[in-house]
Image 1 (tube, rainbow over the protein chains, first blue to last red):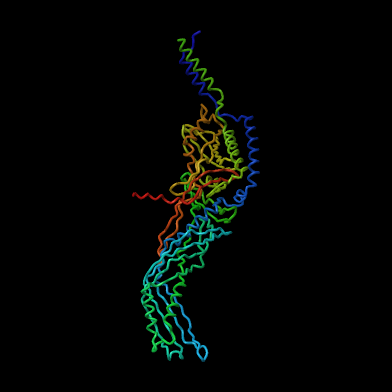
Image 2: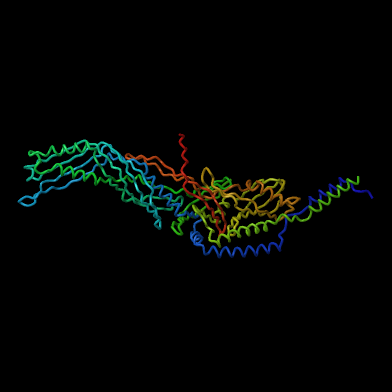
Length: 328
Length: 242
């Protein structure tokens, strides 16, 4: 018998190897063990997850997409947004005009007699208010508010201003004190001072985004003012110019008037911050109205479902409806 | 001559050894069940220690129904997936119940341009979830766990199901179903708009953030994407030279 040639043996071997197998079949015994392990682990997972408050919160939302953001992160972002509202901001005070007025009476042997009414005003000219914001205090206040307390440093600035002082005598007093109106150009100073601006940011879920809308109903800031020494001299001269018998000297004491005006300046004037300083912002996590699946655009309709603060987390939920079958 | 016979017999012996069922490759179902069991072990450990949803910044939770609807919107999917195979997917199911974000696709496969093929089931899992660095959109990628064919013979000889699985695993799946987006964007900055009014002009400002996907879990019918987020540290100031 002839021995088979090596080549024939090799061809036979390769042919046999090529016939090999089909796909592996399930090993029933191994599968049974795996399935048991799987079932046991699945039951343990369900049991443990059921007692986890975060899982319960997450599963309470019915939207297709839930965004959970830690309160700490929201507070950090909100605080920095609030700080940027007022940090390195310059408020033009040129349109600001402050008024103060009052009545003056005097005790006489006839009793108290009304002598007249005075008024003082200051127009701040080219004065500017330079603001620097400090570190805010921020706290979540459910269901949707983030309270903000923002310390603001007002930096000292100087600029031109006009001071007006007027006097209207009553008929009786006008015999000895004529009406007068003084206007003097002065140099005013906004004093360095620290103020606290309080408000809140309201969280809302629009479906597409989570927004922070500022709620600052009280935007008034009291600014302490002063005049340069030279300008106080100008005011004093103006008051003394009325301190003559022919004018109002018998009724008005320039020293007291000057002290009163200094008191008014120290008390400050109220400036209302423009509402446009406080701007709404969108948080950086948001939903898109269109996605690409295998490079094909798919349109979506988004509907906001819920927004709540729970377990130190902001939970927002959105339902997503796929619009139409995307064409290749 | 004798030496040639010896070599030939050795090759024959090797071929006979190769004919035995390959113990190393598991069936698609067993691969899936093994993977699910491995993932469940991790989930159970985290759940029993109270750290199942241990996140610091943002947690994005996506319902399996949405992923299934997104896949349905682009079906059927069809592509040459390599090694001469052509696959057409007619239906897809998403199931995120037990550790694996399973995408279960069914359709037909054929080889070498044949008009007749076999019904196939492709088991895939969403293993890649990342933020597009340019847009911040969450992108998912599917990897192949295994393939089942109803009529493997219709796909050729020499372990056609294994070769189809290999073809899909080595780039074929991306021909069939490339990455898909989840409709959530997380940007690496928070923008504060400008003010441009008569009395007030403030330039737009941004707060830079650090954003990174840290972990992805699948359970309870949802995909849980853990995203670390926080304010970026201010840029280091260059030291002044004396």
